Length: 368
Image (cartoon, rainbow, N blue to C red; front, side, top):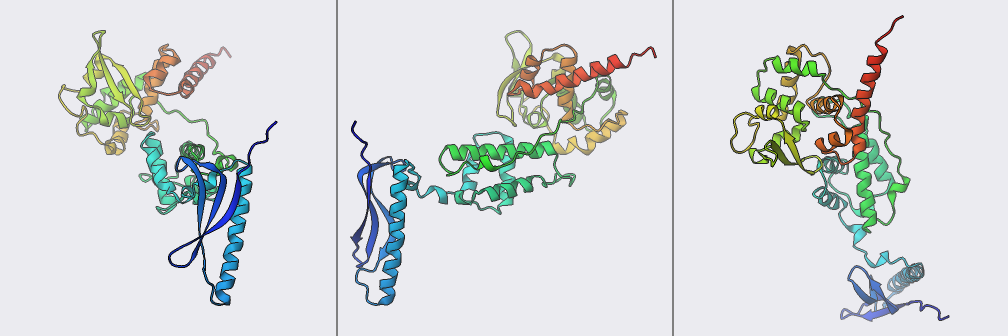
């Protein structure tokens, strides 16, 4: 059986016009260079010798450089034997990790952009691929656990931190897979454990009470009731345009949207009642004048006026929509589609909430 040819690596010199000698490695037979995408024989080391050393300093300098060059030659030969050719692309470790992260956010969804901004703050706006070490990643993990919400000043929830950390680790996995990171750092990182989230939602009687209660900000009231009947996130409601609402083949109306959070394309049915909360049809934004600020203090004030003491945010109206659907017998797969979830497992939490409600109802009957 014929043995495979092993590339020989030889240290050579090339005389320059300046009189100095440039050191390079000569590979024979040539090896494939994935960076330039062709066979290559030469690798210049960026090391130089004095062509005619004139004193002891220059002689000692040449000896030290040659010792370093011989070490590189031996390392390269061993790498070739082990079929590890990463050394051929010496630009990657000096590539801008932060710029790479930013580019990836454009391919992903909103959470990636949020995590990118936090990481940019964490590293003071500068991070190269070679800087991405286990230590740096663990420091960022600690940083994530201490992030504070701007509006309240409170530390973010455990699940928000877990989501951010999971997103960052997904980036590390991609960077390693694409060859930007030499080591799969993920193998040495601990996860942030998720907590069972507490779902805050309104019962149907509470929604009706809210609908019957006047609100100083009319567009907030209409958008809130619309959220209860469609499950749309505030980010999607703020972006909803009349051009997104159209007549469907079955004679009813539907929304064609691309969700802001997950960038999912979806066509969702609209009931006549939900459509009525949109106001008079026109052009541009459906809920003109609505802002995120309205979903904070004005929203809390409206809930208080309605006699609702539950601690619930605008996002809780999405939870309300999901639990009402399941309570009314809608199957979990359909609910998942209506909520534009990518995974039915995400929707399962609402089914668990409804099952607990049934259990509580059963336990409420006692003859003792």
